[in-house]
Image 1: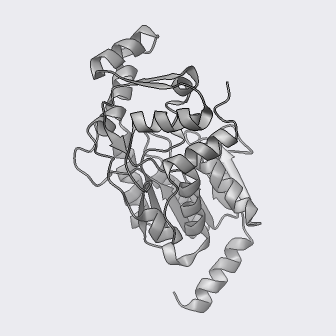
Image 2: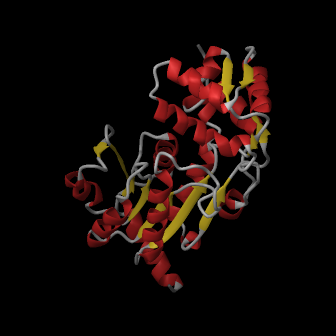
Image 3: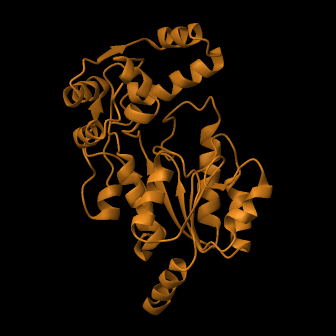
Length: 293
C-alpha cells in the first residue's frame, strides 16, 4: 500500500467507529479508554455494556459491525466464532482487525487444554491470517491485573494467595501495555501483519509478586504454595465442580513449570519503549486504592 493510500485509510478510519469487543474486560475497557483519549470514535461492545454484542447470538453482530472499518476482537473462550464473525465483518466493509490471542500458542505442550480454549485460539488466528483484512495479533502472557481484578484478586484482598505454582515465575504484563499495543495496531499502519508476543520485562515469582504488593499496600499478604491435588481438593470443598477445579489447576501448570518465565519483545517492538515492571503496576494500583478492603 502506498503512502497516499495509507494516509487515506487513516482518514477513513477516523470517520468511523472502532469496534472494541469484550469492552468491559481487562484489555477491552483500557483500549476503549485509550482510543477515546485520542479523540477517536469507539463502539464499546460486550454482552452487558454500552453496545450489546453477544457472541452466541449472531443476530447482534450486524448492528455491532455497521459502519465499522477497524475492530479489536476478544473472543469467547471455548468457541470457534471468530471465523464467521470475520466473514460477516468483511461484508460490512471492515478493513483492519486486531485479535486478542494467547502467549504460547505456537509452543507444543505449553499448557493442558482441558477446557477447550486452545483450539478456538488456533482457529481464530488462522481465520485472521487467511482473511483479506489488515491484521495484527496480540499474544499477551499472564496479566499483572490478575492480582487486582482477576484470578488472584480475592485471595490478595484476603491476605493469603494459595496456588499450586511452587516457585515458578511468569513475566507478568500490565494490561495498560497490552491496550497501548492494541491501540497502536488499530491506528497505525506499521503493525499490519505483525504478531506481538507481550510480556513484562522479567520473570517474577508469586512470592516476589506478593511481597511487592505487601510493600506498596502496607498489608501483610502471604503466598502459600500448594500441590495440584491439594488445590483441587480445596476448590471442590468450596463448592466448585471437580472438572472446573482441575481446569483451574491446569491453567496454573505452565506457571509452576516456569514456561511463562521468558521475556518477549512485543511491547518494545510495537511501542518503542520497554514494558512496565511489576513494581510499577503494583504502585499504580495501590495508589488508585484498587487493593482497599
